[in-house]
Length: 230
Image 1: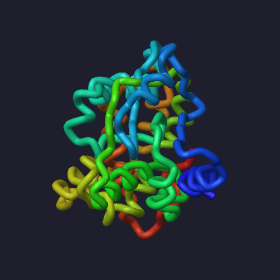
Image 2: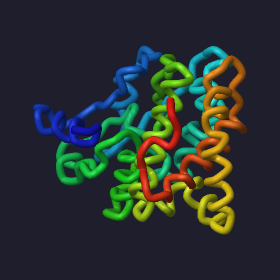
Image 3: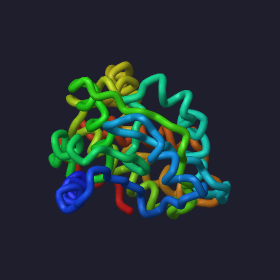
């Protein structure tokens, strides 16, 4: 069905006026979690954010999330309230969610929440941000995270016409358009080795970011199937 369709279905099945969505790999880390949500004056959508627990420095997902942690503070999120939103931890008025459901064209992993926040902004509905995080503690293996990253990049490429103003990666790819042919050639040549390094014991974020850019640019080839053998 896809994550968007599942969430829409759950909202239809719910009985009460408020919905609370929490990703299953998150942990409640404060005793007043529900009180913080219930005491907010916002009547539409409230996002509580998340924090990153301690993890293995050889784990690529942990390194990535930790590097982004400073962007998830409530002060930073409020600067671009409808762009800095994730479905990992939010409360929404049920009628609002039913009136503006997640776009079910997003059937694969990634970016359905980014597009939803954008569409709410178009409709004049601002997302409220509060300091009420859940704890991110479940970090999948490096190979699983790379698989998930590749799936998200395929989603981003598929909906690039809708997300071009909301993705730094798309903007970077557009800025380097003249280099796409050599980048694709080099990436297809080196991708198996890069993947082995990223799945090994000493992954680095700089290499991961290069891999993401190369993979995304390579998606402009005629086939959107897996570029490299896993």
